[in-house]
Structure formats: C-alpha cells, structure tokens
Image (cartoon, rainbow, N blue to C red; front, top):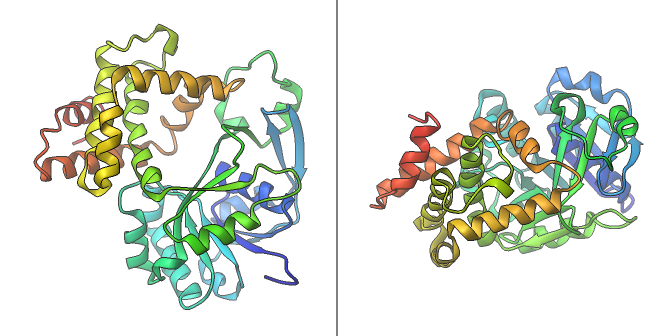
Length: 338
C-alpha cells in the first residue's frame, strides 16, 4: 500500500478481471494486471463497461500491465485476485503463474483471492504455491459479466443497443454486493472488503466458507439445463426428467463428505421444485440480461471444461464414499464425461 492507496494485482483480464479492476479503481485502488502477451494490446486502450443495471457506459484506464509472471516479485501488492478458471489454473501456463505467486509472496502480507471453481482448490493452491492458509481465500464476482463482441446475446428492449455496441464488457449485478469473499481467513476477508468499497461501487461482502463451497453444486442443474437446450424455465416442469436429473445430482454433490453437516442440511432442502424456483428467481434477478442465453454462452464456452471437471470430480468422490450417485453418473454420461 503506497500512501494509503491499496495496490491490487489481477491475474487474467477476462470479464471477471476487468470488472474487478473497474470497481477497485473507482474505489481508489491502484491495479496491475498480469496477462498473457496477446491480451496486452487490448489493455493498451481504455476499457469500456456497459451496465445493465442503469444502462450507462463508462470507460476507465490508468492500470498497469505486466506479462511475465516472474515480474510479480517486483510488485508490492496488498491483494492479488486470480481470475483463472480451475482448468486454466492447473494447465502449464497457470501452474507457472501459481509457482511465481508463491515465490513472490511467501512470507509477505499479500492476500490472494482465488476465483476458480472446484473442490479442494485452496488446498491444491496452498500446496503448489507454498503460501500460508491465512493468505488465501476463495472469492467470486456477484454479477454476470460478458465480453460484448463475443457473446452476441439477445437484447431486451430496455438495453441501449448503441452504448452496448461501444462496450468491451457488460455487467449485471445480482445483488447489492459487487464481490463475495469467503470467511476462511477472517482477517483477509475483513481487509479486502474494506478496500472494495466507496465511491458508489457495489461493495464486497463476506460469505460463509461452507455455504460458498456447497454453492458449487448449482453447476449440476446448470449443466442439466443445457441438456434442455436452455429453453425458457416457464416451459420447464419440475417433473421434467432432465431437470430432475440436475436437481438430484445437485443433492448428491451436497451430500459429499467434504461439505460436512452443512451439505447434508442443504441436501434435505433440495428438490426438483425448489431448484426450479431458485433458477426462476435468478432469471428475474438477471433481467434485462437473458440468463439462459448468458449461461449458454458462458457455461457452453470458456468455462465448460471447468464445469465438466468439477462434475466428474464430484461423481468420483461420491462413488468412493459409497454413494450410489445414480444421478451424477447419468448426468456425466449424457455430457460425455468418461
């Protein structure tokens, strides 16, 4: 922190990373991106962000960009947000970054927030980086964000098509919090939420680590929705066989031993009808963004490998624990997971 100005590093400059930078810079922080060389050109100009919340367009710049993970050792950062998905994080380039993060920040006060989705991500990251437990937590944006040119989503009449067409990214918040960080490291969570606030931005909020972990089970009905070709949820009945498969898979994931008593309690509340109601509510929250189209773009594209890896990991864990895992096995089969 220089002159009481928080210094934040962001690994990755996709939708989540750029939106986090946008919020944090408005909150008064200095931001440095670590990106692959091909992303550097895009960041050489101001980034334009369209808000589905109030239909405005804003441009921002003034961040720094580095492309060599080894250069992290030259950075004095208060926090580092790693926005790589789990598949990218464990690939060769991602693992190189993890090793350099460890080399740069072991024994420092730098807090690391991981945005990847998976079971045991933190324990894996700690083992590979050598950072201490109190330095690392899971975090995620509380918004739907997409690259405008790549997504080509249907437009609600309320959307300003001209402004959206000028944007690099577009964002729709799903609640008052702009970012969620789990409470596995309370001191880290408290310090980060204090930084991610002010100047009218959607402030960060702390979430229960157990609830955050169990929340990953929502990927099962999302993948099942894809089997229904993302049809309108108004036309989906809770007795639909594919939808029931997704809900039952969600329940089997919640019952995994890693999620403990909280997972067992959540599983008791999970029914095909309750999951359908939850998704219909999410659809309303996402308006004017089309949630089905967003999921088709997001979960059918860049993070699909992460989703499938998570489902396969859950299936294998369930079977190893002696669960019948009928739904998980069937859903994995329909998604062509070996």
